Length: 154
Length: 119
Image (cartoon, rainbow over all chains, first blue to last red; front, top):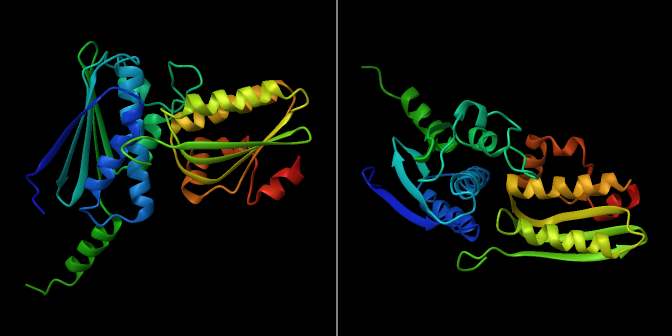
């Protein structure tokens, strides 16, 4: 597996493409040894990030959602970015149940945080938002812990 | 799902004052409007419909957009004095129900028969 490789896909900001983003990331993630529940968690996190770009970043208007995928240090890295309106207060937006749209739950960032190992959000009003998420397969983590244990004494 | 298009199918039945909706497929940003339209049309169309049973045993994916639209139907039904329960939830869907706190307000039964009996 080439760790220098970075796959970049740009999707028009339309709700139909949320499912497409899930499928693309799932296909890429299959390079790593994720379990079915882990793969489902990744799908939810991607769905939330891409939905945020469409609803909040571009306010359901036109735009492009950029999806980047890479394997970094044995972990899946997914970047979801838009050039939309940006988030004025990222800390507030990450609070559970914070929402600016009716009949939405304000759980997007909560799910991303719960289902991925790490998440960073960078946003500038008027410039856009970039979410970086990482997740390492549990089985890989267990394997490397085991190999460390089994290292012969130097 | 084929070619990036999301499938959502809803089969609705009326049993007395209960609307039974069997949901199949993925509930996300793109399918939430159809889910809302179908259930609201059924609920508005049936004069004596009061309660809702959601059979989610064939649902394959849900995210916060999907949960939001389910919560919206719960609110509508509650306002009309009705009750809403869910049945047959797959593990991945149940986890999101728990994490969002929705299982505290929408009772979940393992089978459709149990859900119907509870109302």
